[in-house]
Amino acid sequence: MTIHGTASLANVYDSIKKYFIDNLYTIESVSTMFDKSLSDPATVDLALQQLVVVNFGEYRPNKISKISLDIYCCTREDVESYNLMNLRDLVVGYLTDNTALDGKRRIKLWQSSPTVPWTEIGGMVLQFDIESQVFFAPDETKYKALGCTLMWGSII
Image (cartoon, rainbow, N blue to C red):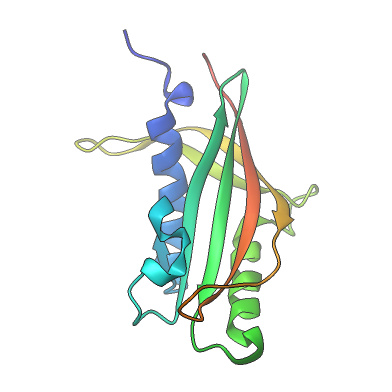
């Protein structure tokens, strides 16, 4: 027996990855990664001057399902955090929507597949929740964490 596509965590993960890759990487040319071990910027390729790392957090399945996201904006060789603040502003622009009445970003939920074209099966609402101070990694990388919650209707 299979679960409904809106309750598939694989679909949620793939949809979020698609959103960030299509926008941050493809449009903005910002290296974007999805590996918790890369949260510490010191472990990432030192040639990168800026990158974004997206980590999936707690998942709460329900009729309105929720998952938390931690998004790390990272820069190197960045005097006075100038590049970090610009990267943060760019990322927050993709986390919010100033054309929506509530300011919340809508992201398509896809039925993903390795063999057939993906099909849109719903949508998720992204709520930007909290932002950290600037942190410094041992290799002098500067980074900021942005906390978000994604919510969507699911059939469980």
